[in-house]
Amino acid sequence: MNIKSFITTLCGKLKYNCTVEWYNFWYLILDKKQKNVPKVALIDETIRKIVTEHCSISRFGDGEILLTDNKAIGFQKENVELSKRLSQILQSQEEGHLVCIPDTFSNLNRYNRKARRFWRTHFFLFMNLWDKYLVPGQLYYNSFITRPYMDFASKESSKVWFQNIKQIWDNRDIVFIEGEMSRLGVGNDLFENARSVRRVICPPQNAFAKYDDIVTESCKLDKNILFLIALGPTATVLAYDLFKKGYQAVDIGHIDIEYGWWKIGARRKVKLPQKYINEVSGGDDVPLDAGEEYQKQIISRILPDIK
Image (cartoon, rainbow, N blue to C red; front, side, top):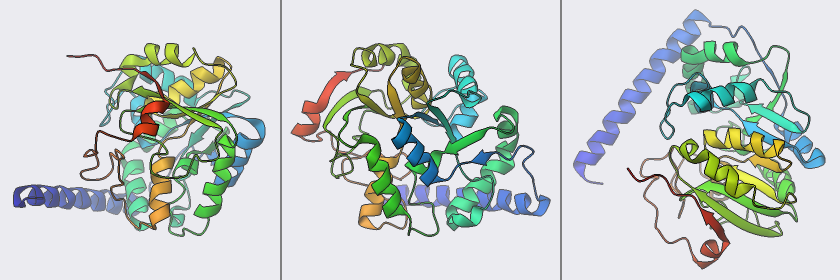
């Protein structure tokens, strides 16, 4: 990194940290309260329900709730149809489909300082959106099944959570629907217990623009396969729609990256070989070649429109 890039990065971090501290201060001083505090199942309960009942899941996080209100995020433009669909799914109650949200509405002491600061800032700015869209009294499931390591203050449960979540695809034929460069399972053994692995490669940004093509390609496959989807907010909608078409589809998010960090004992978010990680400086700098086995697993590529 040259001196100019270093100064730019440092200034960016200082600005971010000052902003976060400012919002944390007012969040604590004003003692802001959520009007609608949702009930969120434990990680263990969420994994157990997926495994025993072969449920599909759609996850909502800080990005999805902004898009639900038709606001843009870093890798997905605002989209009226996407906003409509996310709102519908967040409020849905379908047998066999779990709506998952972060378990951060209470007891933030479970998480490390960085995570606590992030969620206080998020709730200070956007608590009203959760109040607007969550269904009072509904049981939600835990979106942190796909983030079971980095943000927790204690890492003692992470090993068991990773072991248990692997039961979802144990001896299953799985198809990843993932963004270009996501490369689920490349370089680790997270999916070694699957019977087979295939991949549908999608645009890494603004994937919802190609939504109809992604659905069409997915529905060419047999109903007995398990879809594991890592495609940002598009995955939230896609998992629900594939469930409605008779598939089991799990919005698997960052599980592969979290597993990689756990394997090396990382205490902060760092780059991983051959992986695109949008939360790490330089995380988009990945080699083009992911190996022969990865290439053989690709059954379809859905390319972004050329501008």
